[in-house]
Image 1 (spheres, one colour):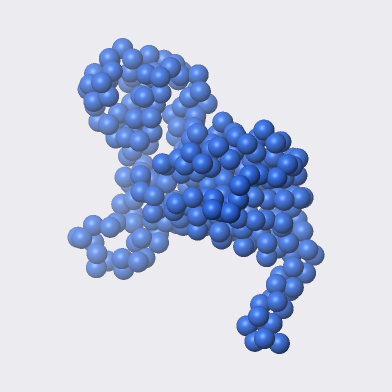
Image 2 (cartoon, one colour):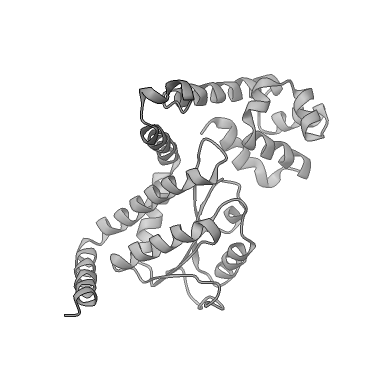
Length: 278
């Protein structure tokens, strides 16, 4: 991620409502800042040019031109990278469509991997390996992610369960060894945020997997993993998140190799008995 992303994430909570509006627009439409003067950006947002300038100064830039130069560099690099994996009709015959889409996913996964902090990843895997109980929540299109992670953790011996709104009325009382993993992507579910608030009140450790370092879940998460992707398409998040979850489960398995082997063997024996009725 470019510096302006990090600067916004670090300063976001202290920004005024108007400056947050500018920050959100920059994160969603960096091309608008790269291509237009401050006055035009302000007009598009319905704010004054002076507010755009104040936003730049608040983030530590000398002015709009310095921020714009950085954003232009970011936009140019994105354009150059994606041209390596073209999806245009003109170049359709040069590379199979499925290959172009999968290479695009590969780039998104790499971008996210490079921005995950190793210390946080180690903290998450250590906490999960030692957890007494893990509750995993994801609603709407993130439910499949939560479901997969629950099964994967159970398969290596972690006491994980999937949150189901129709069955689970409340969180059990717990401690730091009780972990709540929440998937929270735009549009952010109020229910999962309320669950995170309750888990925090009950002293659970909260791991948030989301689409931005300034997403609402960031206020509650002890460990936050933002997933970055090149375009605002929710369909692009799945390959990145599943790849990250695989890394997370693998990281826990390495810490508990004997438990992992034993549990996988037990689950396989149970599966065979259920399949063949032995």
